[in-house]
Image (tube, rainbow, N blue to C red; front, side, top):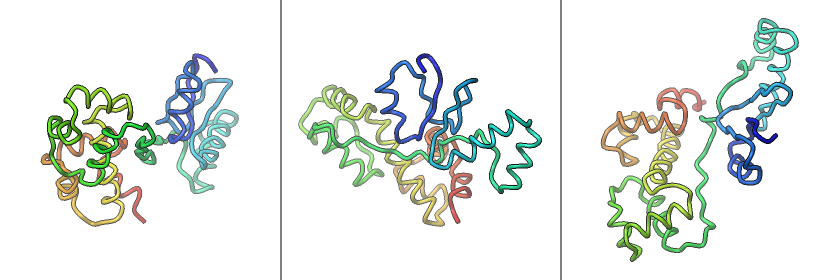
Length: 198
């Protein structure tokens, strides 16, 4: 598998990439067809895998008819809308952990890096370096992930407008919220809500 693209369940992608650094892990893909090796991510990706095999053996028309008969979407969907933010809390850095807890408790609060650093008695530069080493994300990236995680929950469970949800999770500009939401989930907020609500 060295030098080849592969996918897996989004929750295991980072571990796969760490254990096998020569594999080009692409966790956003549900299926990756690399010729003689096909990889799939997610427990129900077997349906996508099966349809891909039908397409390879019987053609696209038969695959689409099979998908309609099975009442499933055609393959090649992304895992992005299913992917959840799984923060690291087991890194052992107490100062970083305190900042993480601040973000999770009140993601809507606007704090400068200086204020965060002062709250844990570190310099800004030291906090940024230690935070990245512990979480593998910059402070702003981490906070964006926390905010989008909260926004996803609100989109799934409330009828609030996208604008009110943007404000509730700490964004003063709904357009910026939509852009970041799309980048992290692969969908616009309204599309995401339509896909996940029963």
